[in-house]
Length: 289
Length: 113
Image (cartoon, rainbow over all chains, first blue to last red; front, side, top):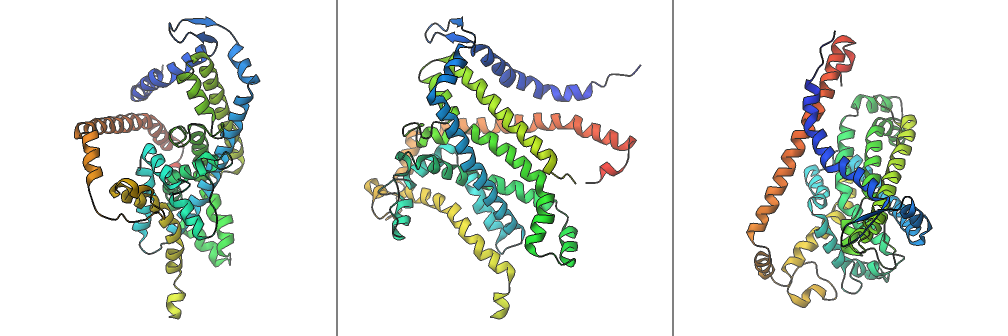
């Protein structure tokens, strides 16, 4: 008879308890709430089954929210990964004043979301903002960033990328540090140029990091709330009304907890599906040394 | 001169300066805004440096949010950090232990990074 090894369970228990109380229980409760209609005053509930989900499926506004969320993910994740990878590669090539650069790139991460958003409100100001001033020196008349439905989502995405770039740079630098220099050295001796070395050696070796950063960034972008709440409040005309913001409005402005819970469940399903797809792609493309 | 032009590190430094300054500029602007008075904030053209170095805004901010509230943030930040590090380390231990047990019995290769 084998002795039960209880130590791992003991070590895992703080995490399991905290997650159960603050994540799993509320998550299960919102699945339950999504099948109910909740009275905003008495908090009494009535079972309505699929009704909340049906209403969402028929809501044009909600489909638009889904589109806005997907666009926001593309606008933030792709530029953020490309730029931070390029910056990390440059930092890894040992520029002068390396520490100074690393500090500058990490600074926006240390600024709180609320402060960063307030700052961008000033930068985006159509008449006195610095961004449009810089554009005007090039003879370009900048748009009214946050109030223009065609530009507001881009504006929020720029502010988000600015804030989160440094974080990805750190991950990529850590990934690059674990790429053995002998591999690049050997490729160089075999006559591979810098371009070939990047695509054939560095990037495959870095693929676990790219994969991780990709998964985390997609989840993060679907859950973005703070900067949207401060910069645009979902406006103008719903142009930045991402899924999370739509959920927030229904829960805390329209006091429809059941309806909002249904949105939370759908958002969870979308993020789960997106992560699953990434893992499927990752299995084929990611190379673990 | 030719030697300087062929210095790869120098070129990388110069190229990196562009994104680094773009990343840094909003923070510089935030600090500058904090010293600006009244309409100066919305002056056109906008200025990078304030007209004068007055700490009025800081005084007002400390009055609006006294040091006591900074203490709240401190307590919260400390508690979150400690709890996260504590639970995360404990949760990672069984995995590490399982791997080192495996390494002993299966092969020594998995001990290599």
